[in-house]
Image (tube, rainbow, N blue to C red; front, top):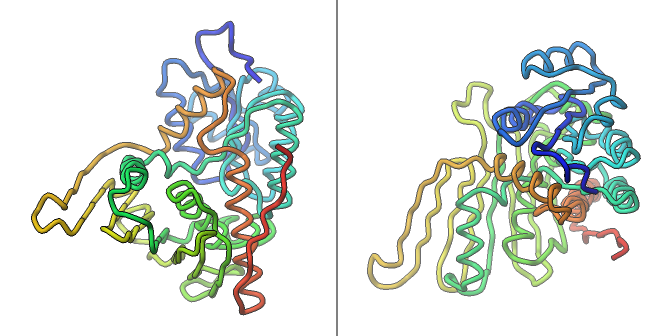
Amino acid sequence: MNRADEQDSLRIGMLSSAHVHANAYADIVVAQSDLELVGIADDDPERGRKFAEQYGTQYRDRDTVLEDADAVIVCSENERHVDWVESAADAGVDVLCEKPLAPRASDASSIVTMCEEADVTLGVAMPLRFSEPALEAKSACEAGRIGSIEYLVGTNRGQMPGDWFTDPDAAGGGAAIDHTVHIVDLVHWLTDERVAEVYAELGTRFHDTAVEDVNILSMELTDGTVFTLDGSWSRPDEWDFWGDATIDIVGSEGTIDVDCFDQTYKLTRDTGDDSGIASVYWGSDPNYGLIRNFVEVVKSDTTPEISGRDGVDAVAVVDAVYESAKRGAPVSVAYPELES
């Protein structure tokens, strides 16, 4: 729903600042001349007021934020996403929701349905598709530069974030739900296939928490391609670099190694000379691409690059991860059926 047709700037509201990514999104919003941060609503008044002061905006109740905003960014605890998004949908306000869309695919499906019925735009904050190396990899794969994709190896390792991320009632899980969705969505996009089956090994090895901090996943895509992923909270607190989102794509005629945060793209092909080697470095911010894409689709009333349905697919894989770990056996991914 486009509420910004008669304005020069798009008015953005924040619904909760519980998630560690909230600051990154707010930094981008306040730096853009065509965007205005009109306020933040938060269940935690102290946190909300501190966030509002930091960004020169107002701490307000959710109804007031929704009344004044053309679009909102939901950065609450995972279990609160349904509630916050429902409020926005009821108010006819477009939504960018932090990942995972919800802790369970059934709840994620409910979010998509409520937004579609309310005719509001729903985007999901899984920004790795906007990483320049990932975009280069997508182009190379589509051009057939490495032949057919035979095998994928991904990582999304990081520090344990603490706070509510280790509360199963607030987060819905641990490192698996926190880190799996990013790389799964990236692989779905790069290959135009979906994860069909998952075998998961979960554990708590590095921290004294009520949730898993280690997850090693062996997956098979719908075309039979094997995909493995380490999405663990295995980096020490003193780790000097944030982020570890990588994907190695092994093709029948070459390989592509992508590091989304190091902004490194390396392509190697067996050509017999150095023409098969390329290494390119960037300094772009995938979060910037995420926010700008959301802004443009809100203004034009089109579909976001990462839609609510993409978010449901990623959470469906997470559901299978936890079920596999519980059973100790491979599990087929059950993707919810959504109306076209």
